[in-house]
Image (tube, rainbow, N blue to C red; front, side, top):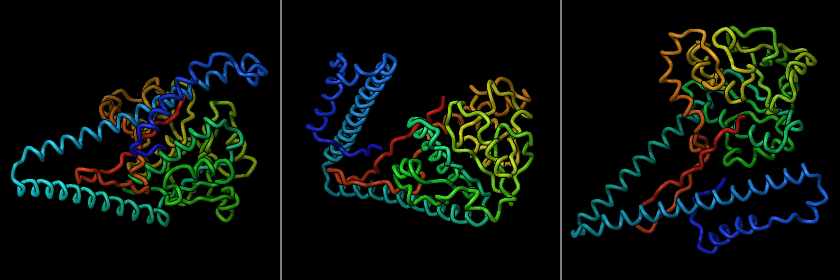
Length: 359
């Protein structure tokens, strides 16, 4: 993730020069010529994507630099417009007071969130994300899963009564991807290298694998049960995989009662973060219908089970759909970096908003 630090002119020139160099190279290299036509097209497509990504990154950094300079100039102009030194000092102290109050409020909110998550480790609903499928996913799918896990943690931290989240099978390539997340080591979440069947062997009778292929419908959430969600982004390549795994291990399997309340346009397979959020919503409201309508995007639904309920939640749904696509990492345990600017004002570094990669 890129930090919002200002880069010098030489670095900006180097970044700007990189895309132009790549775009001008149209002739394939000797290594590329040995590939099949399909592989060459795929490689060229990836190269174009990298060029576009570098351009966007450079544009974003330049935009942030200009915004910083604009704010500094506005502040300097405001100070220069005041002739009295006493008035200038009052204005500076006022800004510092506002910033201090804002920082204290954020610190208080962070402490409350940490207390809630710590309490959830004892009394919260156990929700496990099974990460033993990393070998079946492409690099892009792994990145998508990592983002979904990040959303799970952020949403859980916002809840008034969060669940107790587990990451099992967190090793190898999957662990390496997760370690790249800023602040991951500080997350209040169970990180288990072993599989859930090994780590929770003594509670095997309480394990329930949530899969759309199960015949049993989940009517309610039992606080004594441990619900498992398959950490798999496979674009529907591996159908029935989680159900087969549950059967081989001799543990219970169940599916969410989605079909009882709404009709999906395609399958009832949801992303990991959507399933986690539905469970958290249900724990809060004890209403499956409201939970589904607030989490499942409109584009995935064909028709609602009740028109009246659909109208009632229409405005709320639009707000929820937008908010769930943009969750700031500043809500996690990661401490936002601070820096002093020339005009004496301290401002928080903005953290890039990550968008969920869902097809």
